[in-house]
Length: 325
Image (cartoon, rainbow, N blue to C red; front, side):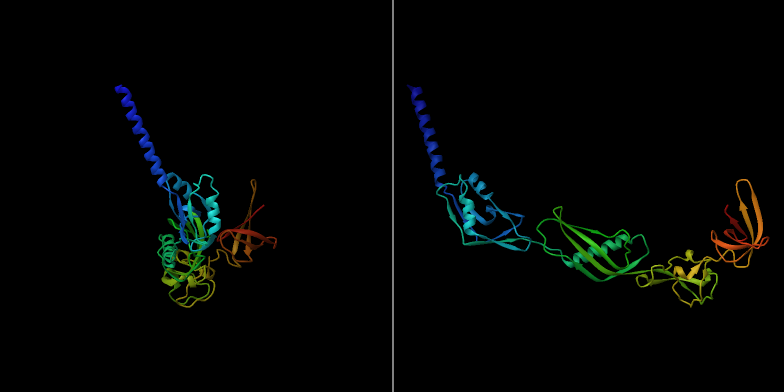
């Protein structure tokens, strides 16, 4: 008898508990209130982004995950009709029949955004050039800086990578491409440009030089100049000019260019030379007279003194030319 009473009491407790849960469940009535305006961070719009939802946790999660389409671009907006949104909600067969949906005539959806200030691009541009030139004794200055293609970006972690053409010189007009990534995804390619003045040591004449003068250390010195305003073939090291010959007369303080100097000829027109003709089995030499001038390895015209014929020979040294069989 006692066991029967125990079972009865336990059954009553279970039934009461179940009824209590049912009552609690019944008290949670699903309601959805759509906002007239909403800001979206991501690329897609879900019901949870534009509505306040009251329901059981599981049903609230299912309702919030209803997909409403792609979000507008950063800093842009789009409008959805309220009736269309309600139809998307009502089409769910699992939606409780007594669900209350409060929806305006239209919903304005805007996308959150961020941007990169021009100063940050300027700092990146200057920093890039400084890193590329750090191994050189170079000063530089950037003017006329411009940014083309900058704009709104989605929210997230920004990373900018600067690239340039492999053969681009970092002086004068310089253009770099800024690849802008947000959370690892490429969002924009921005063009950064500016005029880069570079100040380097260049070789200048210390005094006037006559045509065909052989340059010595006393004839030249190095001075700081803005090479961005000089021809690309400006000479920057004394070792390139000592022992060279100037092609024409130069004034003092002239910045030397590669086309202003040349190697002095080993052989001049009228010089007597030895003509060598050689093969694997024979060696023939003859006296000749140079008809043109030239330096090491140059081919010049030489007159053979024996038969008075002109030949083409390669300069070996200051007194010898060689004819190839």
